[in-house]
Length: 426
Image 1 (spheres, rainbow, N blue to C red):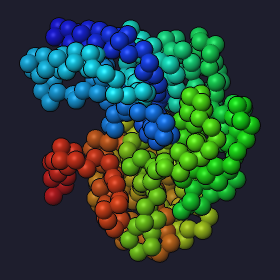
Image 2 (image 1 turned 90 degrees about the vertical axis):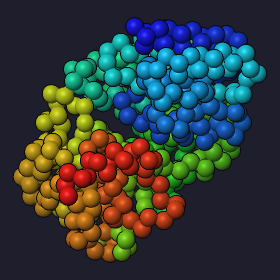
Image 3 (image 1 turned 135 degrees about the vertical axis):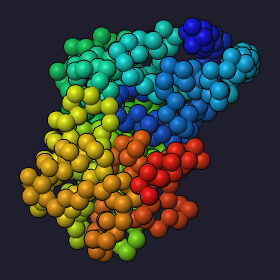
Image 4 (image 1 turned 30 degrees about the horizontal axis):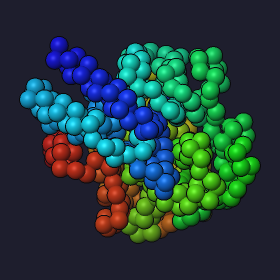
């Protein structure tokens, strides 16, 4: 009952906030994967011209979204009424204060059918981006069609939509009930697209941006993997809709850096290159990361460390086996697995393909094994989900941990949680 009361109050505060400050623009980002990368890229672009509010974390749940929009910290004691009374006071002050932002960029996360409709009760975004429709929380959604219905429903309460043409199957077009939308991506059918011409690990992709407003113009995007270009293009499309000129887009792109744990290229020990993709894992993202690893032609050897993909429900076995079958013995020196799903399904499938497979008990042991078998000029992809997988700790073993190396889940709370988890292996 108290949670319902809190949500009702916070939704009312957000409605009042935008009513008092109609000049503030709201951009929301939905989708199975790629929300945070898109948000960060969009913030880097828009900050050249606007004051932007963008929560650095992924506060995208029904409780945290109103707080992130209003710029109020989530209380540490969520079940303490007095903590929330303080939040309510802060919200009322925020409504009355002069505006401190021009644009708010907010993720919307869904776990169950109906979650998106709850956001629609109090939000009217100026632009909604939908980044992907891939398997997520399948224990609750059941089918990919249900996922598509949920994610695309954000367009029903948004003024304009932007849809990733590459990662949303065309068969879901019938689920779109807002005619005011455009598409973005890297395919030729996208209205806002990037056509890569050259890739360099230190520079990124050089190529051409195509946009109907400006035709085409050259740009460089410093990311690894074609799938990493799509979040950037979502941000570019939104910025152009906000009136950004090509020179502003190019200048903003030069400031974009990979989000920690998302296809971040790091210098490892002994001349090894590490692709840190440890933030999370899903079937589509893992497959794309593996294809990116294969594209590095000049590597002495390629090694992949694969951890469990979480929240796949009944499709977990099938998706893990499918990923294992993508492991090519002609392109990989080793496949290293972490987690029970990976051990039971990825490892056997990779072995059937003819791959050398090592099953590690945890992320740290995976890193130690990789260190023992790598040679100079090797490239290692590390890809897995959070909670009991923690492959960022594998990356620590592989890299010289200088101050400029940023990994995910390194705050005190996460480190304490991980320390307790790894104790069981001692």
